[in-house]
Image (cartoon, rainbow, N blue to C red; front, side, top):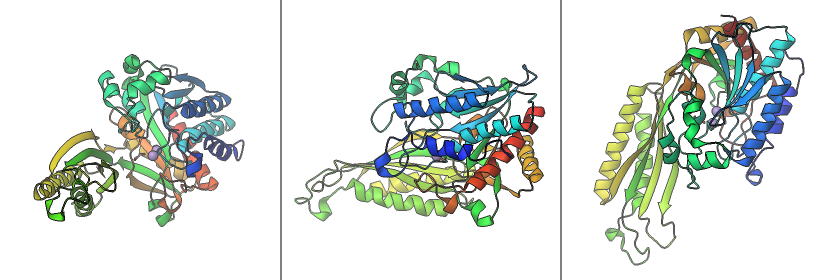
Length: 412
Ligand code: GLV
Ligand code: MN
Ligand code: MN
C-alpha cells in the first residue's frame, strides 16, 4: 500500500510535538503562531520529499502540486488543516494533510501518472482562533473580505489582520487567496470521523454525503453587578442565573428538533466581573447550533432566541443577540462520492455513506467546487481532545482509499 510503512505515523507523531501547551497534555497549535509556522515548515519539507512543488498564498494556505500530464486541466485538490483547537489531539486535520502526502508517495510507488494535476493543501485556520473557523478556505472561496480581517478577533483581542501581519502576511492582499472555481475539478478531504458512527457500525471507511453547518451566535445577558452579601435574593438581577437557564434551554430545544439531527452547544461562557463576592452583571454565551438540515436548524435557533428573550424578561435582564457565523450545509458531489466508494470497494473495504456533524474546509469550498470527504473511525468518537486516536491500520486504510479516489478523479 505504501513504499515506507510507518512514515505517516511517525510524521503524525512528530507534528504533535509542535505544541504550545505541553503542560495541559493535549496539543494547542493555533494559526499564525510561531509554533504553527514551524509546523508548516516541516510540512513543506515533507511535501518536498514527495516531489511536490510548494507555495504559500496570501493568507497562509500551503499548496503542494504534483503536475499532471494535462497542465491546463482543472486540478484535483486534496487536503485539510494542521492547526488545532485548544488542548486538542494529533489527528484532526493532520490526517488530511499528511495522509494526502502519503497517498502521493503510494501513487508514485505504484507508477501512477496523474492526468489532472493533484494539489495538496493545508488550509490556514480551520479551527476558530478568531471565533469563526475555516478562514483559509473562506479566503480561497472569495468569502473573506479585508473588513472581515479587522472584525474577526481572538480570545486575546488580536484581530485576524493583526495576526496575519505578525506572521509576515499582508492583510491587504487577502483577495489574492481567492481560487477561481473553474480551475478546480474536485476537492476531496480525508479526515477522522470525530464521532462514534463508524466504530459502532464496525465500518472502516465513511464516505460523506453531506456536511452539517453551524449557525453560531452570542447571547449577552445584562443584569446588575451588585454586592453578593448585601443584595437580598429577591432584589437581584443575576445575569448568570438567567444565562444558565438559557444553556439548559439550548439542550432541550436542540433535542426536540424536527430533524432529529440538530446539535446545540454552549461552548463559551464569559461571566463578569467574575468575583466570588459580586453578583454576575454581564454574561456572554457563545452558542453553536448545527445540522445538515438548514430549515430544522433555523427553527431551533429561532426557538432558542425566543426562549432566551422570555428568560431575560422574566428575570428583568437585558438580552442582546449578535451573529457570529451562519454557514450553509453542503452536499457532496455524486462523482466524488462515487470515486471514493469505488476506491473503497476495490480495496475490499465496506464504506458507509454518512453525514459529517463537524464542519470542514470542504464545506466552505463545496459552495464553489465539487467536494467529497472520506472518514476513518475515531476511537470512542473522541475528538477535540488529547485522547483522540485512530489506529495506524485505520489511518492506512483511509490513505489507500484517498489514493484510489485521487487516481480516479485525476484521470476523469
Ligand atoms: C471543526 O473543528 C468543527 O468544530 O466542526
Ligand atoms: Mn477540529
Ligand atoms: Mn478538522
